[in-house]
Figure 1 (cartoon, rainbow, N blue to C red):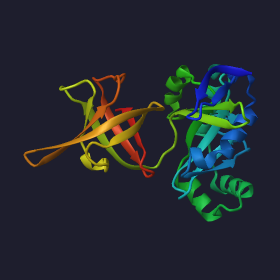
Figure 2 (figure 1 turned 30 degrees about the horizontal axis):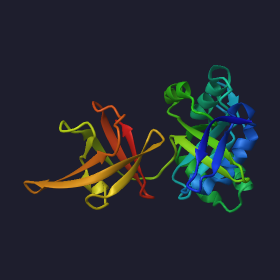
Figure 3 (figure 1 turned 120 degrees about the horizontal axis):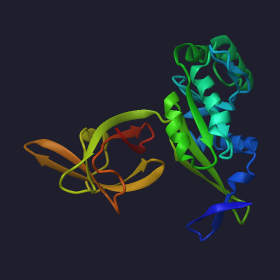
Length: 268
């Protein structure tokens, strides 16, 4: 069964969204793991089928973990379907994973059994020194979940599958995803125009004057043009948004650049 949306590629081929109501959770999980290198190029995905308990005695079992390739960060990931209830099911999962007890030998040993190419000593050090972050991946945009999940300092990502008429799939990712930050800068819209964003740390943007730059904002790609100016030997960098501006101009923003040279904008 197909969902409400579809995608047309540059070869004039249609891809139809799989109806969220027809999903099986395990199929979604396996698809995400199979596309790990493309979705999370700086992380490894490892199945994680063991119970996690917190100090309140609550128990839950996640689906997999994301391990940063330098072993400096890891995520406990719960794959969910949009038809599931936040109050009756998902909140407990997120609460347990966010407050869980992670014993380094037990966790590292389990991960090593799942993937023997991992370094067991680095795994133990990672679990011992870095408490895991929590991410929920869902197959449809859920605005209410995004607000509620912040209570646990967890993140929410959307992963949708579109089926092509010739047997090929395409995938759509929206929301928050793990990234390795290379640099950050505070930004603010100028008084001179509702689509001109001043970047207060100009060195973060290495592209040339008049270059077009793609920046992800709330999972959507926005296009900007970089402009530079000098006033009394002070270098200023501006980003001019192409198209209509739907960003709140009264807010302050943070521009983040990843180590893979991708830009992300979020409200400060």
